[in-house]
Length: 333
Image (tube, rainbow, N blue to C red; front, side):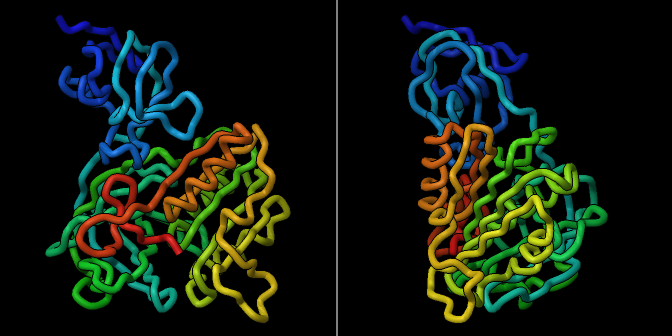
């Protein structure tokens, strides 16, 4: 006979059989826990285990599990962040700007309100094209205004969506935006030093976090590390230059290829230039999974709070879709 366990997640109560996947047990009981990818990568279903025991689904964050991977083996008390509700709104492309030879910026104007926490991502369905996921970000050179938001997308050869920005997808192109998803968002009201680590267009969610954090508290200490493969892909330079003037912000720019004549650009990957972390730091990372994992290990060793957005490859090509569940590697340098 199957053994059942009582589960409390925030204020929701439901039962699960021993060995059940936590998320599946909740959904079958009519409890819609936050989730998206169901692969243990996106972080939308992260939960803190306050009491009880699960098996599998452990995350890099101490005491946190992925509900889509963890199996129930006792009564449980869980807590999770309450996220904005997932919505789907109509939208249009209002601007396309070539930032570098391989990165394009899109300005998207939604027809309705779509609350997105800085650092979260959404799913974008451009009319006539398959869905892709990207992280909305702030303008690189000035504070955001209005409801429009920006996307920084790397054009990838063989992609079904990104090569068409400016070609088949032009200003005025209609799309649907679904979201938000993800747990690597800015936790407001904190005062600990922010350490933000970005590879390629992983800078998009990290810049959203940085911009919002500084607008909340312009004196908050911050280290912003951004890396690319070579200097000609350093599209985020206006943002780095903008915050480097602040006495409380340290900026580190890296490139994997040697950059002769540019001493300000350090050789290597972003994770090669991490500062010494402490328990009071709050660390975020976005980009290639191996880079994110390296930062995670450093944060775990220091017992620092850690949130991540690893850009995963998916599909039949190296298409640039957003992350976490089926996010393509749009940002890893």
